[in-house]
Picture 1 (spheres, rainbow, N blue to C red):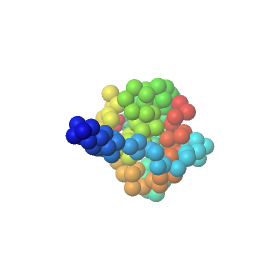
Picture 2: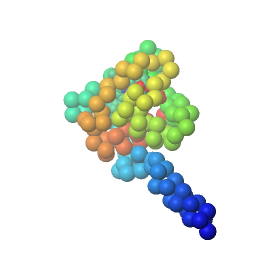
Picture 3: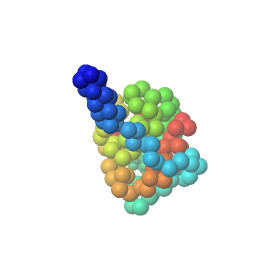
Picture 4: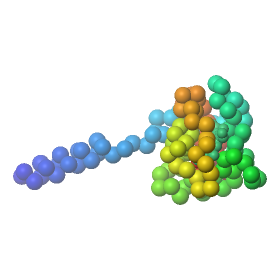
Length: 124
Ligand code: HEC
């Protein structure tokens, strides 16, 4: 009897402590709006396109071509990887690049803007 109780409590703890997907509460993103935001200065934050290009080389940040496939290799959902990369750029560092991404998007962008940017990036 006691053992069942212990197992039950452990199961509850496990459910309560499982980290939830940080993107679960984001509004629905719109890739068209995301495309526009990508090349705009937003709330004094630099445009993503300052450092990221769709194609080409010799940019400050990774190019977007093949983005979805690259992002899928990190053991979290592509949405979550993208979200974390935008709000805490130091969390994952892309090999070959410095940790030099602008670091204040979490306070400069609205949740809607972040969702739109994610929707845009996931197209590549
Ligand atoms: C000042 C230059 C700079 C700006 C501006 C910038 N980034 Fe970055 N970004 C980088 C660099 C450098 C990296 C690679 C290092 C790292 O992973 O942090 C990167 C990495 C990323 C990654 C992970 C990329 C991958 O291929 O796995 C994402 C996603 C990303 N940026 C999205 C954005 C978005 C969206 C914006 C605009 C809101 C933005 N970045 C603005 C420089 C920048």
